[in-house]
Length: 312
Length: 255
Image (cartoon, rainbow over all chains, first blue to last red; front, top):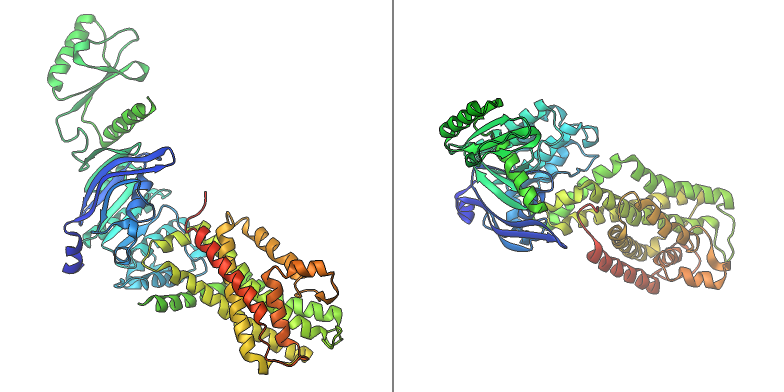
């Protein structure tokens, strides 16, 4: 957008410090810090109930916060100032549209709420609804509805776009198309903040990912460096017959079903000692596997540790 | 765009959506005319009701009240609860459109529908039952209609704030209107009814709307048709409606 708009919030689109939100005795968000730069695609990844929607709805101005500092494009979203509302686009997890209007009518209705809207037909084409532009909302399929959601969020040509679980319920090809749309938005210089519980979605789309579990951010980084993935950590996995335990000094932990697993930055030494022990003890390391952790491993490890901690 | 321009623009979209919704258009316009025909056929449109009032002279304002309440109170309560359940209101709240402009659009549209309804019922009554059109009381008619429609819009928003969801809206809305229609000079002439039931009906706004309208359409008494006491009670209900709506209205679906 213009230099004037850019100056209002500097290079930071979203800044959050110590964000907390309680509903009665339930603490849904327990102290979150975030920083989203302008022009990046930022994904908040986490299981259902982790606090994603609560967080994003505080950033969107729908919810008040119990504690913490929040700045969105230089504004406090809780005040819902018109200038801020004019500069962001919101795709909610679930929201309806006036059913008896056509796609073109609703897009132009929403475009009219904003000071500098995008061209209506351009928006409709961008989300791939050009062929359905004159159809009433009532007559659209589920996937087309979701595209209308995106179109309405884009109608005002926002600098910042919030997408709350944008592809939940999509078939694989619809997801790919949605991803293309999100990427093209980033290409236009928009900042995108998305929540998702799909790891592949975060991995393919985002420049940076924050993993949230039980109301806290447990890891932040690029999809390639997140958690231990950027360091030399390697995972070694194998199974042993019950009752057989590997040397304690190696720090190998038992998993379910006789499986053992260790994450190490010195795999050569660990493997050497492990295999040496196995040969000497005459046991077979069944299904021995040496691998770099996938984002999925990181995610599962972070969110399940967190779950255990929370339950304890 | 200014808030007022946005509200007026909203009226256009409300109007387009309204006429494409067959149920709303049917109940708002066809229903009152159907009642008008039924009552006039049953009771003989041109026969006397006593006191020099003919059946058609009584049911023309009655049907107007019925239609205006549907166009304002009923439609707003139903459409707003449905829009809330569907997340339409929540989405609106995520745009720079001022919330009052959205509501104003809906209210102005309902008031415009009310005026259109009066014109249709008046023409119908005049053509088929030679009902006398109250040209001499036009200022009173416009003011009564504006206060009545406005107050019932406010009450519609108030009840939308109290109704838990769109599924329960029709029952609650009908329960709050239908019994009162029978005791408020809308469906039945209350002159011979027991005084206690007249007292009950006079607590509620429908009776005062109907009486004010009846005074305007009744050809016999002279006067300018301004029923200030009735208008005052309606306005008080309208203000109460605004207060309840402000207190209880929410933009998000209720779990």
